[in-house]
Structures are given as structure tokens and as C-alpha cells.
Amino acid sequence: MKSTLIYVHDPMCSWCWGFSEVYRQLVEKLPPGLKVERLVGGLAADSNVAMPEQMQMMLQQTWQRIEQMIPGVNFNFDFWSLNQPRRSTYPACRAVIAAREQGDEYDLAMTQQIQLAYYQQARNPSDDETLIELAAEIGLDTPRFSTQLVASHTHQQLLAEIERARSIGIDSFPSLVLEQEGHYHQILTNYTEVGPILDQIELTHL
Image 1 (tube, rainbow, N blue to C red):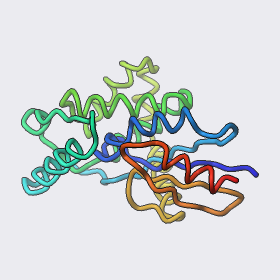
Image 2 (spheres, one colour):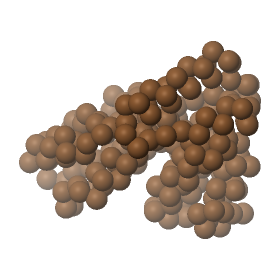
Image 3 (cartoon, rainbow, N blue to C red):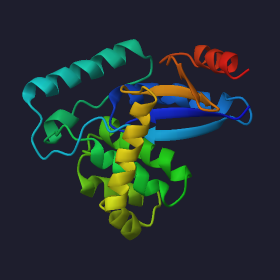
Image 4 (tube, rainbow, N blue to C red):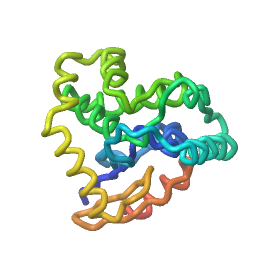
């Protein structure tokens, strides 16, 4: 039976950063022949408006909660003083799609580079300038990436992936769904252990 594990994420979703190590282990240990499809979920639409103080405080509290909950995960809180935060993750999502056009392997590579920049280096992936710098850092053709980043078809692909995620019942990130011949089974995430996720997949994948 053909099966696909669909992973829905946003590169600027802090819980996705918290899940990144378990996700890495998951991909390494998946049953042979199980395809992985990655979708960007578009957490927050384009905006040039500064993030309200209340939302900034709420997100910093979320970062603290993730640090407490998931061993080994940490955040660089200098981000909040060194940048003007905006509630805008669509640019980062488009960057993943634009990177993917230069090879499927760049989907994960760009996601990881955005997370590193945002959560460890206090850089702002809501800014196209930052995203272009990150593309160069992972070895992409930067002029080509810069063009793709703002191309209308890249944005249309983002909207299509958001719609696909919603059509299979996903509205939060990170999310895992196992698709088998048109039937979708949500897989519960676990932020500290890969075993319970693999158990669910293997039971459903029988």
C-alpha cells in the first residue's frame, strides 16, 4: 500500500523549532518506502506592521515554556531587542518554496537555516534581505532565489500548500498526517521522543 507522511510546518513556528530534533530522528527511522511530503503552513500573513508589545511578550513566554518543556532546546532572546518584530511568516514560507525550486534537499536546508537565524542568531526572517543572505549561506544560486522569492507563482504555491493543509484538517504546526490511498490519519507529535510517533506510523502503515 502506497503511503505518504505529510509534515506541515512553518519555519518561524517556535514549536516546530522545538520539534526539529525529533523530526530529524523520525526521518532517519521511517519504514522503508514511506515517502515524506513537506508543506509550509503559513502561520502569519504578510505584514509591515510592528508586532504589538502584548504579542511580543506572549511569544517570549512561549519560548520560555518550550525551553522548559523540551530538553536541549534554547532560544536567543536578543532577537526581541535587536529587531523590530513583525507578525509575518509568509516571507519565510516563500523562501522555503523558492529554495525547493533549486532541489528538493533545499526545502529542509532553508528551513533549518531560517530557524538557526531566527532562534539562535537573533536575525529577522520576516525580512527578504535576511532570507536572501540565508540562501547564499546554504549555497543557493542567489540571483535566481531572489527572483523566485517574490515571484507570483511562489506565492500561489504557498496559498496552495496552506489550502492543502486545511483540506486534510491541519490548522496548527507542527503536524504529521499519514496518507494512504486518499485516507488521512493524523499522527500525534511528541516533542521529546521519536518512539511514540514511529509506533503510530507503523500501526497505521500495516
